[in-house]
Length: 322
Image (cartoon, rainbow, N blue to C red; front, side, top):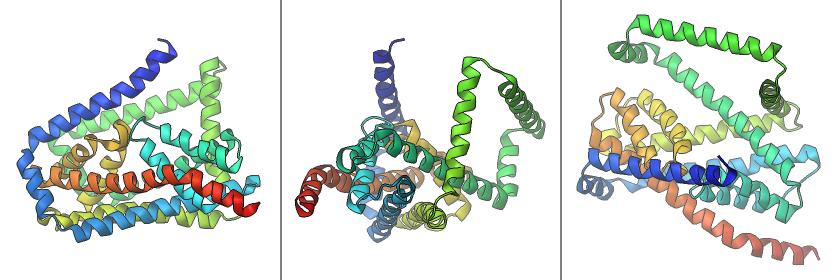
C-alpha cells in the first residue's frame, strides 16, 4: 500500500465511521424526539458548560508557553490561543491534522522550528494521557463494586481472571522481548517508549513545572465539570450518579479519536456509558448530541475567527514592533 492509498484510508475511514455512527444513533432515537430534547433543554447549563470548555482551551494555550520557554522561545499568547483553536477546528476535517497545523502556526508566525513545536505538543499529549489514566483509575477505585457487579452480570469471574492473567503474561513477554531484542522494529519500539518517558520526565525539568501541572489538572477539571454541568440541561440526566458522569466522560473522550472530532461517535459513547447505569436511551443520546453540538459550535466560532485573524494579528504586531 503506497502513501497515497494510506492517506485516502486515513481520511475516508473516519468519515465512514461517522456516517455509520450518525445513522445508528438516529435509529435509536427518532429525530423528532431529538429535536424536542433540543427545544426543551435548559441552555443556561449548556452555556456554562461551553464556558468551562472555553476556559480549558485557554488554559491549554497558556500552558503551552511553559514548554517552549526552556528552549528560548517566548511566544505571544495571542498566537498560542489562536493556534490551539485552529487546531481543534482542523481536526474536524482530517484526524490529527490539527496538531500539525498548530505547530505550523508557530513556525510561520514565531519562527520556531516545526520539529521543536511539534515535540512540545507530543509531550503535552503524554501529560494529558497520564491525567486521563488517573481519572480512569479514580473511577474504578470509587465505583469498583458497582462496575464489578455490572461486568459480572455479563462476564464470569473465571473469564475476567483468565483475561487479566493473560494480559499480564503477554505484557511481561513483550517487555522481555523488547529489552533483549535488537531488530529494527524492536529498536524503533525502544526509541518510541524512551521518547515517551523522556517527554513525561521533561515536564519535571521545567522552571515552571508546578504551574504546568496546575494547568494540566485545571484543564481536565474543566473538561469533567463541563460534562457534569451540561448534564443538568436535560431533566432526565440532571440527577444521574456522578459515576455515570465519569464513565460517560471517559468513553466520550476516547470516541473523539474514532471519528473527526467525535462526529456521531460521541453521542453513542455516552449512550453506551449511560446504559450501564440503566439510563433511558432517548435522553442519553439527546444529551450526547447537545454536549457535542455545544462544544463543536464553540470550536467552529473561535477556530474560524482564529484562522481568519491570525494573519492580521501578526501583521499588526510586526508593524508595531517596526
